[in-house]
Image (cartoon, helix red, strand yellow):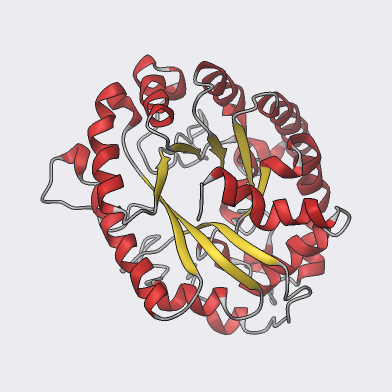
Length: 338
């Protein structure tokens, strides 16, 4: 299925429910060539700015690793530094255009390098123009061959490897954070990692990956129960903060929206995800939760205005101070955005 279905998405138009609320988009991607097997075209500063300025009051954003711009001329362990160089250039272009700033860059380094990862982190920091904030090393792995592993070559129990833990510990020692993208059966492993490296802030991506495909789709209620139990365990680790988003990823969460005749509106999205999103916020607390767009990946099912309207609907029952944390404050603090 083509993911750049602009005519399909264009059937759903919404104005911002709250156009004044300050938003830090805590998670988006950028790339300059076709991705996802050629099904999604370039997404660069102009496309990002069009989304961020089209409806809601998005004031800053955080780029997160997607293997963009790797430098093939460098040694393999240093090649991801090219992504930071690429994104820093896009951030400069966004600033020159007068739009919201890409204030943080989360790139990739191999945590299995252990303490030796310090060389890669220093190079990222030097290349980031003051924007480099941390690393994502995706560890999504599952025993089922119906689940596609994530993009950094994970293996079973990777987060428990001594070298991996040493790498994440080094991140914290150098003042950087670790973004975790995994699947919900791995949440106990994440909690063990967080307990082993309490000095490192860990940013758990996309609601902790509550899978609803393959064997988890066939036992959906049990999977949801298991996910909730494991999220409670992760929340006991004070160094773990949560990204609330990724809700448009039909290939993991099986909402069925990608096959619908018309894309969903914000009320439908909020009705689908509201209970689980509020469970996450209440479990971690608003000061440890941040909203994210995960664009353009979530654009496979949602428009940018619909996504943020849905999050505003789901957050409506919280106080103004709590909503400030969810929409901007937690991301600003966790990623040390200026």
